[in-house]
Length: 156
Image (cartoon, rainbow, N blue to C red; front, side, top):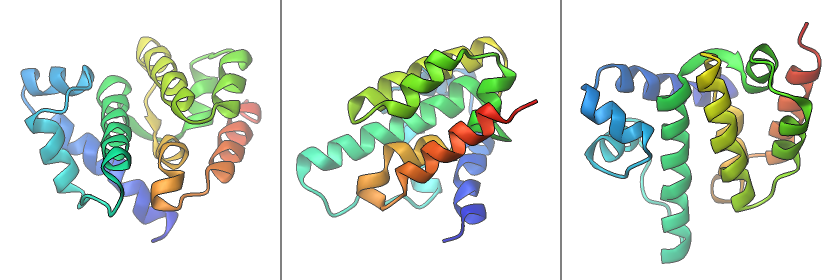
């Protein structure tokens, strides 16, 4: 799958989100794994992976976070690093995201999502997905870190 094709997952999720009622949108912004979450995951063709029970639970939690970020801050074809720069997110926060590992990535992305929401700055959350799902889906998390840093530090 090409980067362009995989990016459509985020735009598809955003389009689906925009069509939901207020209550369903609020549920997704809160990060609840209720009916709207399951419908959105199914709409992009994400099926349960062949993982251990614990790893499957974690996989769902990661997708829940991706959908929550799109619900909170919105989607736009703006690389995540550039969106952070446009929102004047300080370098320290970006460095913490770039150096985060494991569940710390979740915490950093939640904070970043709140900052972008406060600044009304939408982003392409593809690099967030690559960071979160690198192990389960074979994404290159180092490439995602490079792309976030490059588009953050070169924004004028």
